[in-house]
Length: 358
Ligand SMILES: Nc1ncnc2c1ncn2[C@@H]1O[C@H](COP(=O)(O)OP(=O)(O)OP(=O)(O)O)[C@@H](O)[C@H]1O
Ligand SMILES: [Mg+2]
Image 1: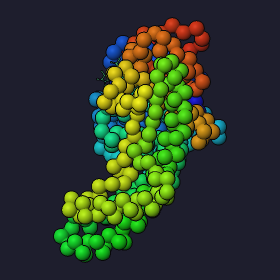
Image 2 (image 1 turned 30 degrees about the vertical axis):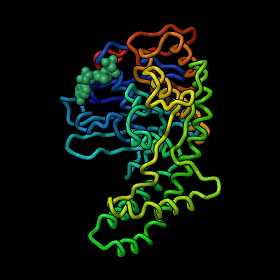
Image 3 (image 1 turned 45 degrees about the horizontal axis):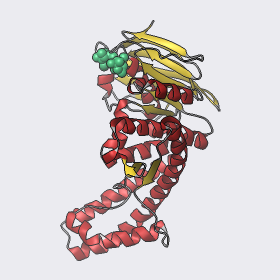
Image 4 (image 1 turned 90 degrees about the vertical axis):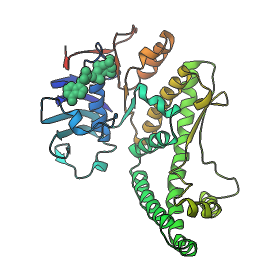
């Protein structure tokens, strides 16, 4: 995939701007607070439908305006496409794909594929399991819409099951009612878990290669916290587990196991990164995972997504910068930086000053 042009109107600190992007590396260069991250945010929003910072629409619209618009012209294997996002301080946002209104946000997902990395992405390694599950769910949904629907189905059944667990009914009555919901939950959980396991397996393959490429001497391992028992199918295993925790679930009033509680474990040389890796190692792993995701998505959709890198260079030493930029040449990459690093091949340089291209 390749973005040809981003056109912004009253988006953050941009009043009116049009940015042309090239294949390969595009450096977005400027001093602090000029609009570099805002530009990446506009692209992410056009891909996922919401801000990576979880900002509300009215925070995104320029302070002095009532409405904003993002327009992206891009090329895919299937031809030229266009996305328009209309933001309004008073109304809900509306979205057009190829000039046609879409009714649900889920229709947008997968149209423009991006992989986004910001310094904030460190939470993938450091923070709570929910951040890692979000990473899994957003990544897989990008190329697998049935997975997204399965997540919604799971969430609905889980809420029904939790409502029973929390109700005032007797333990016997609850146990009886759960006989209906637990098998449904297991069927849905199995679909989610098996897709996550497949995804992690592919991701790990790419990540280990890239990680060795960048660090030269460390080994990375990635593991989904659900490990399949050799003698049981996922369904059989889950059925046994739900049975095992039934009285605990009833006592606590919610479902204590399942894909909504799972996690990913990253290890460098067999040590869990969350507890043992240095700041620089954690950064490297988070970045490597995003680069690996580029490969996984390419295998699924038949073309590379667009790589958005916010402020990554300032965190890396010169050798790592060079190795990283070299890896990114193979796809369209948009990198923000405050100074242009020296490279010995062609790159596109876009200078941003005070919400305008100069
Ligand atoms: N709704 C808005 N209207 C107008 N300006 C805004 C709005 N939201 C944020 N800004 C401003 O946009 C400016 C640029 O922000 P941005 O995060 O893009 O900077 P940056 O170029 O990435 O800087 P840095 O190098 O520090 O990361 C900020 O000064 C911010 O105050
Ligand atoms: Mg920034």
